[in-house]
Length: 78
Ligand SMILES: [Zn+2]
Image (cartoon, rainbow, N blue to C red; front, side, top):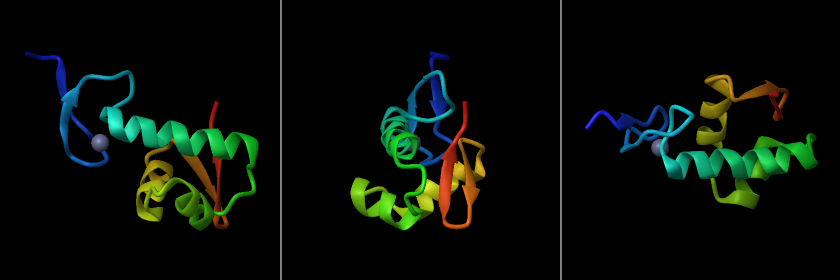
């Protein structure tokens, strides 16, 4: 016990990860980030189409500080 956390994004109980999200949300985050790093001008709606991850989830990552939102596109941090 104690090695579990509630995911900030989908509310699932999951094993602790380095980020405050479950494995499937982390996978989604990394997928989005890999697109944003190569094509920083990709619109959120197009990232959503390419990844199958809902736009609202992508925006939730931005709201929580994982990306910077800029007029329809997002920018990675780090
Ligand atoms: Zn999750």
